Image 1 (cartoon, rainbow, N blue to C red):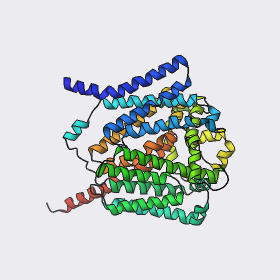
Image 2 (cartoon, rainbow, N blue to C red):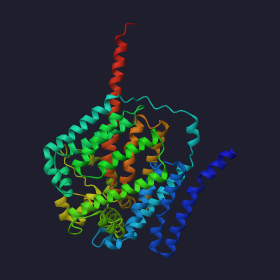
Image 3 (spheres, helix red, strand yellow):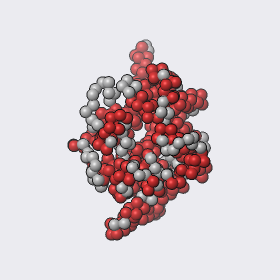
Image 4 (cartoon, rainbow, N blue to C red):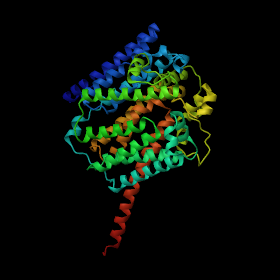
Length: 467
C-alpha cells in the first residue's frame, strides 16, 4: 500500500504542478485585471501536452493531441490579431475569447489530473485483455469501400467533374450543400473512412485494402477540394503504423507534423489568393513565407477565437431548454426526409452577423465549441465540455489499447483521431453529426449486422444438425 501511494503521488506530481501554475496565473489575473495574464493561462496546455508526449511517446494520445491543438487555437490568433482588421477578432475583441478558452484549459488540465489518479499502464502490461466477441468479416471493409467510392462517383457524374474541378472553393462548398447531394458526399466520405479504419483494425492488415482506401480518399480530395479529406486518412494510416508496426520518433514526428502544417497553411493561403483576393498576381512559396510571420493564426483560427468572444458578449443567445445540445441530433437527419426547425449555433451566428452573406453562401462560421458551451452553461460550460470530450477520448483510447487497436473499439479510436484536431472548430451538433451519427453509429450497425448474420447462420446450422 505505501508503494502504491508513493507511485500515485509521483504520478500526480506533474499534472498537479501544471494545475497549480494555471490557477496561480488565473488568480493573478483576477487581482490585476491584466488580460495578458488570462491569455497566458492557456499556455498551460502546452506544458501538459509536452509532458504527456514525453512520457507516453504517443503523439495521438488524447492528452498529447487535444492540449497541443487547444493551445494553438488559444494562442496563435494572438500573434497576428493586429492584422485582422474587419475580422471577427477585431470586432469582438480578445479578452472574452481568452476567458472562455481559459475555462476550457482548466477543464483539460483537471481531466488530466483525474486521468492520472487511475494509473493502469503496469496492469495492462501484465495481462492480456480479450478483443471482444464481435468479428469483422474480411469482405465487409471491401463492401463499404466499393459503396463509398460508388457514391463519390455518382456525385461527380451528377455535378460534372470538369465543372466541379474548375469551380472555386466557395462554389464547391455550395454544390456539396445543394439539395440531394448530401447522401453522395456524406455517404462517400463516411463509408470510405469506416472502410479504411476497418482495414487497419483487423488482426492481419491487408496492404491492398489500405492502398485502395488511400486512393479512394485521394480521389475525394481531388474532387471535393478540402484539406480534411487528406488529413483524416493520413492521420489514420500513420497512427496504425505507430501502434501496429513501430513507434514513431517524437522529434521526427513533430518536425514532420510542422512541415505538414505549413503545407496546409500554404494551401489555405493559395485558396485565399484565388478566392479571397489577398493580392494580385501569382503566389509563390517565397510570397507565402513573407506573408506567414505576420499572419499566422489569421483567418480560420482568428474567426474561431472571435466567435468565442462574440459568445462572451452575448451577441447571440443559446436555444431554450438546453436545445443546442438536446436538439443536436436533428442535424444528422437527411433534409429530404424532414424540414428542420433546428438551426445550429454556427448558422444562427452567421444569420445574425452577416445575414446577406449567410443567405448567399449558406455557410456557418465554424462557431467555437467552447463559445457555445459558454452560451449554454456560463463560465463553467467550456470546462465541462472540455472535460467531457477528454474523458470520452481517453475511454475510447484505453479500450482500443486494451484490444491492441483491433476490432470495433480499434475502429472507433481510429475514427476519433481526426476529431481531436477538428472538434473545437464547430458547435456540438456538427461534432455529433460528423462523428457519432456518420461514423460511430454506422460502424456499430454494420458490425452488428455482420455478426447477426453469422449468428443466425450458426443457429440455423445447429437446428438442422440431427440430434
